[in-house]
Amino acid sequence: MASIALSIMSETVEPIVRDTLEAQNRFISDNMRRIFLLIYRMLGNVADAQDLTQEVFIKALQRQDQLKDAEKAAHWLSRIATNTAIDHLRRHGRVSFCDIDSLPEPVATSPSESPEQVVLRAERREMLEGGLRVLTARERAALLLRDVEGLPAEEVARQLNCSKATVRSHIANARVKFRRYLARRKP
Image 1 (cartoon, helix red, strand yellow):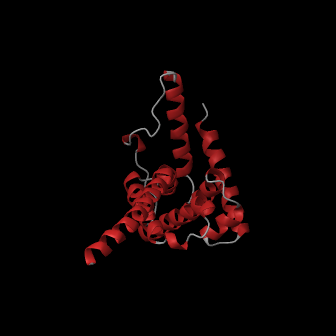
Image 2 (tube, one colour):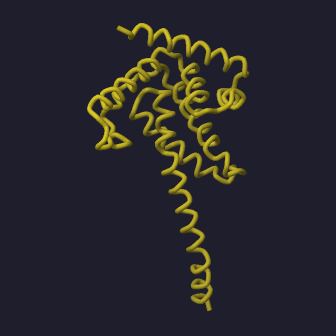
Image 3 (cartoon, rainbow, N blue to C red):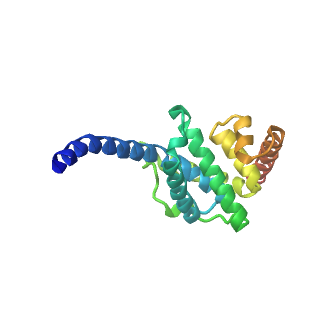
């Protein structure tokens, strides 16, 4: 009798567990690169960004029952990532940028991409990283959340635990500093 009950239970439970694992794997693979880049841009350190990306997904999967609306999953995950990165910065102090070139290229260069296009892409990435270095952690977080992640100012304020006016100030200051950085780099 017990073996029949176990057999029925395994036939019922196994597909549910398999579907849940597939959904979790799809969620992770769909968001991994975006979350890593968000954290890397905030911290400027590949090793820390890798560690914190794992930590973010662990936190998210442990709290997935808190997610009420699947449409808002990307913003929910971005908030977890931002808070995790900010907590890390508070614990460990200043940002220390390291070379991201040691990572494999996430998007392989296409055969149609010319050597000039490859060089231009690398120069743009170097300019972006250099511009982010001149910003404070709060300015960098506000700018990335607003301009890269596309979050509204209200959501950025909520994630950074400050007022909407403060977010606007951080973003304005970050843009001014970034423009000055770019102006100094022009030949």
